[in-house]
Structures are given as C-alpha cells and as structure tokens.
Image 1 (cartoon, rainbow, N blue to C red):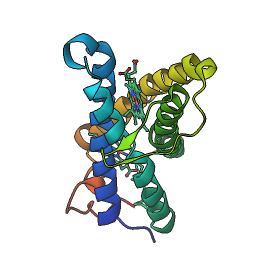
Image 2 (cartoon, protein in one colour):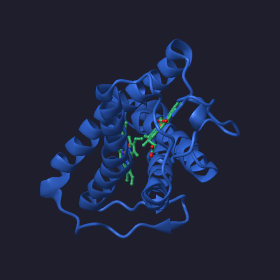
Image 3 (cartoon, helix red, strand yellow):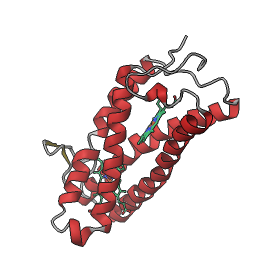
Image 4 (tube, rainbow, N blue to C red):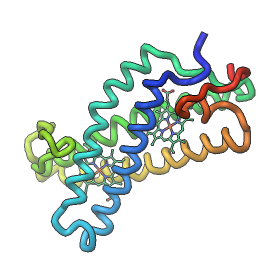
Amino acid sequence: MSEQHYTKTAKVLHWLMAAIWIAAWFLGAAAVYMRDAWNPQHGLTFVHKALASTLLFLIVIRVAWRLTHAGPGLPDSMSPLMRRAAGLGHLALYAVALVGLPLSGWFWSSVAGKPIMVLGLFQLPPLTEPAKAYYDLAKQIHVVLAWGTGALVLGHVLVALKHHFVDRDGVLRGMLPGSSAPAGRA
Ligand code: HEM
Ligand code: HEM
C-alpha cells in the first residue's frame, strides 16, 4: 500500500528544488530584462547559472529516490481523467522543467563558449565545442522552455492551491513538512 504522504526526503528534495527553480527563473528573467540596471557586469547571469546548474545534480538523487519510494495515492474524489492529468503534469515537470530546461541552459552556455560555475565552486564541462552557428537556436530553445515551463509551474502551484482551499483534500498537506494527509486520502 502506498503512504498517505511523501517521505521526508521527497519533501526536502521537492521544496529545495522548487525554491531553487523559482529563484533561478526570476534571476534569469532579471538578467535579461533588467540588464542595464541590475546586470551590467553579468553578475546576475553568473548567479543564475551557478544556482540553476545545481538542479542537474539534485534531479539525479530525486529521480533515484522517487523510483524506489512511491508517493501517496491521489484522493478517491479525483476522476480517472484527473489522475491521468496529474501524472502527466508531474512527468512534464520532471522531464521539461527539471531536466530539459537546465540541459538547454548548459547547451546554450557551451555553444557560446561561456563557463558555468556550479554554486561558484567548480566548472561544468562544456557539452560541445563553442559553435557560433548554433548560438541563436540554443538561445531560442532555452527561452521557449523557460517561458513554457514558467506557465507549467504556475499551473502546478494553482492546482495545488485549489486542492487545498477548494477541494479541501489532503494533496497539499501530503507535501508539507511534518504533516501526514488525513485518512481517506487513499
Ligand atoms: C545549467 C543551467 C542553466 C544555464 C547554464 C542557464 C543559462 C542562461 C543564460 C546564459 C541566460 C541568459 C542570461 C543573460 O542573457 O544575461 C538565461 C536566461 C534565462 N534562464 Fe537560464 N540557465 C540555466 C537554467 C535555467 C533554469 C533551471 C531556469 C528556470 C528556472 C532558467 C530560466 C531562465 C530565464 C527565465 C531566462 C530569461 C529568458 C528570456 O530571455 O526571456 N534557466 N539562462
Ligand atoms: C509554491 C510552489 C509549489 C507548490 C505549492 C507545490 C505543491 C506540490 C504538491 C502538493 C505536490 C504533490 C502532488 C500529489 O500528491 O500528487 C507536488 C508534487 C510535485 N511538484 Fe510541486 N509544488 C510547488 C513548486 C514546484 C516546482 C517549482 C516544481 C518544479 C519545477 C515542482 C515539481 C513537482 C513535481 C515533479 C511533483 C511530483 C512529485 C512526485 O510525485 O514524484 N513543484 N507539488
């Protein structure tokens, strides 16, 4: 039988990665759209890459943990269609927001010949030789994925809040620290 709430490790990984992801998103956007005011020496770009690149390591631990530890089931009140949508949504968050987007940033910096310093501590090896011909494409992929997954994450957060405040089921509580979802959330 699956548990009523996520394991402590799954919760820590979810909230740590969520905080990093959201901070990285706003840092990336600020680096581009506030370039003159806030990013004249590319300091924000450096911090954006230093922080976002940690997701590439954390996701390996997270997926390994998830594959060996089932999450809680969904509430009985959810229709089969909604369960399917929840599963696909989570899969998209993993595949596109947490793997595809950081990879696309890594690819972009690689073709640009720019270093990525993970947490400012060590450099990620480039994925390819610098390649000017791919610069525009790599940039476009990162920007499209950043905005697409921005919408996906916003939807994810709104659905979580709807579960909590409208449906009043245990879905959000199942991911909150220290609490277990009430019985009945099968
Ligand atoms: C290895 C990881 C990553 C690298 C190397 C990377 C690299 C970059 C670079 C070089 C820029 C342009 C900044 C500038 O022009 O000053 C950028 C922009 C951006 N990045 Fe990342 N990124 C990574 C991961 C992420 C992640 C995980 C997110 C989302 C949480 C993200 C969201 C953004 C956004 C929103 C922009 C602005 C896009 C726009 O032009 O509208 N990036 N990134
Ligand atoms: C304030 C922000 C957030 C809230 C309130 C939130 C809430 C939740 C909740 C309640 C669940 C459990 C769903 C269930 O029981 O089926 C969940 C799962 C998940 N969340 Fe979030 N989340 C947030 C941010 C994020 C971010 C930024 C990401 C990634 C970019 C993310 C990725 C995921 C993934 C991949 C799962 C599926 C976990 C699994 O079953 O393996 N979340 N989230």
